[in-house]
Length: 130
Image 1 (cartoon, rainbow, N blue to C red):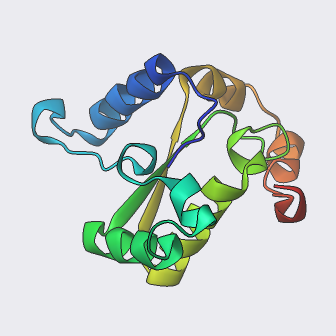
Image 2 (cartoon, helix red, strand yellow):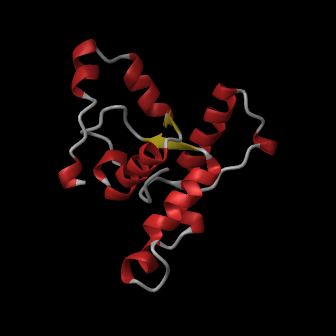
């Protein structure tokens, strides 16, 4: 799960780092990336089948979701300001699949320097304005 405003370079770097952190071999690890496989604009316009149902079925078949997050601070995060990524997390929770988070490298450095107060404030997501 990611947002279209991320650069592909940043996304791939985060994916490589995630694989390394989890001990996954990149050559044999596969990622289903929603924006490459689903045309959300067609779903919204009614041209294609119900995207919500299709997305939920796909998430259940895969069994886990990895969220590529640009900032650990939800109020500053581009990821949590967009409705689709929030929806993806909702669907994953509803389907009972595993959810993991992969922080982009600059956010990892931010997180390491954060105070407890900053961490506490960072977990609120403003879904109504996403």
